[in-house]
Image (cartoon, rainbow, N blue to C red; front, side, top):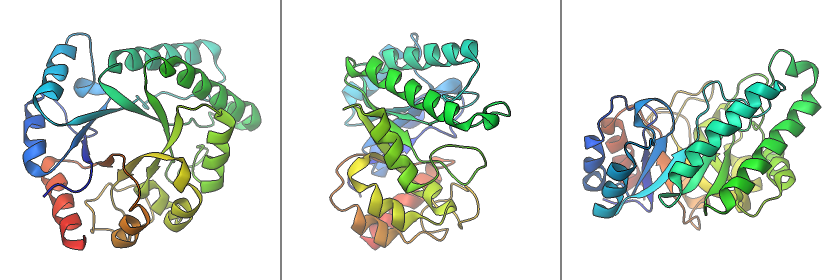
Length: 258
């Protein structure tokens, strides 16, 4: 059964092969999110293969920009320049293939923790630059809310609204990550305060204490309420699971509550 525009993330898929993607439509998925890390990301060498997959299936592609060692709030000019170069490279590769690029907003390094306002402004400027770069590529930069971790931007609804308002670009939106919101105990507040900012959605479950990425229904999130609140949302909803089997469990769960 196909549930709206349900997409599957490659966050835990390893190995160079894309053969597994052929299973997604039969499972009930309509989309595929490529995390730009490891062996499953876009490269000049696999663009033709990825393009062929999209042309021979009905799958809609989104990308998740890299986040390991990628701090948009870095106060080290050389490091930040390299981060921006890599981000722009991934956006160029995705041009014409994906319309959404998920982005993490940045965090405070040991040095940055002494200058939090400067880090905040650096993060805003970095996001503005990426939005400007991707505007001509017809890609929306969807900034993701973060889980309950220390010294990281984007954990609170008001903070996310302020962040996107300060970025102030037409192609800046929000990735609402319901699992992350649940680690803050703020699912209801995110759905209330950020609804008009949402361009993209990530769905996975947890018990409220840390980011477990469980299949839907195995944690404490009230998914029936969430789906009702998102009834007017028309974009992709991405399951971030550890395997295709867990992805299938999510589809079965959603089918049973719909």
